[in-house]
Image (cartoon, rainbow, N blue to C red; front, side, top):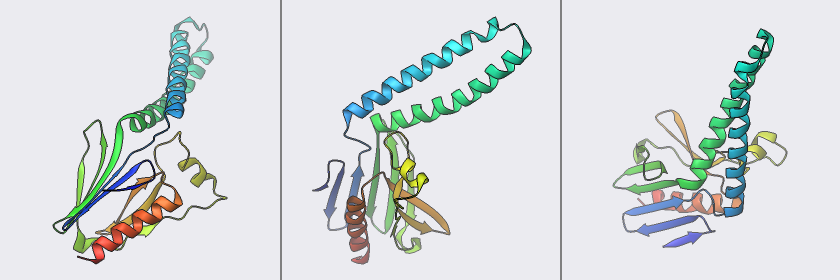
Length: 181
């Protein structure tokens, strides 16, 4: 078994390539994310509880709009926290099939792709000046994939929030294995 960084493990056998990518190893940031989630939840509950105390209609409309934004961000931070705490990405190639799974707590849909229908993998380059790339690579969101391939005209992305060097090493391992078959 080969290990890349603290989060990526690669198992390579004669007819099998298996890659597991963990979302994080930083327990301090995960603890801060949990505190943020709890504080955000408490704020929303307090505002929700005060809805019925508002005397005028305009205040109630404001609270409804506020709570819709609150619910959107509550959902996103909860989703990111669950991913960082319990998730992992799995990719394995065997018997002419590429299988990919985003597993959370040992559950997740496995997507299968025929290797003959998979176009070449490519690295997703990040721009140092792009705000969107900076946000997607931050710890606080779920996303920031670094590898992609096209199968049946649809783009599929994987390897969330890995560094440039890790992405390059993953890309080399995958393409080398596919080309040897």
